[in-house]
Each structure stands twice: as structure tokens, then as C-alpha cells.
Image (cartoon, rainbow, N blue to C red):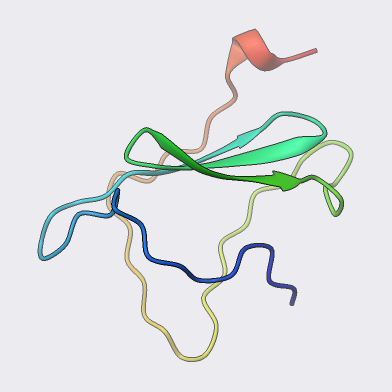
Length: 79
């Protein structure tokens, strides 16, 4: 387990019962992280799998929930 981005406050997170959209874009050498269509972090893709892999993890007994979870390949970004 490795922390890629430390926790921080973001003005892009909707509070209360509002839904938030989280998006991760694999750009080859970097991974871009978005909250509600706003780029919030770019991380070096040091630990990427060559052919890509998707995974979700919640540690420390944290409960998470998703609705409308979509995993897709953007055809325009394929080599």
C-alpha cells in the first residue's frame, strides 16, 4: 500500500448529500485525477501496469459507496 497523493481539502468536492464525480485518466507517463471535471492532481505513473489495470481500495475500515460506476476506454487515447 502506497500513498500517491496525501489527503487535502478541495473546493471541488460537493458536501452533504450531493453526488461527486471522480475521474482517473491514464496518460501513459502520468495519471490525472479529476473531481467534478476539475483536474486536481497529476501523478507520475511510476507503478503502472504495462497493459493497465483497474482497482478500488478502501483501507482503515472506511466504508465507501458508488452509484453509476463506469470503467471505460477512451478510444481517442488508445495508441
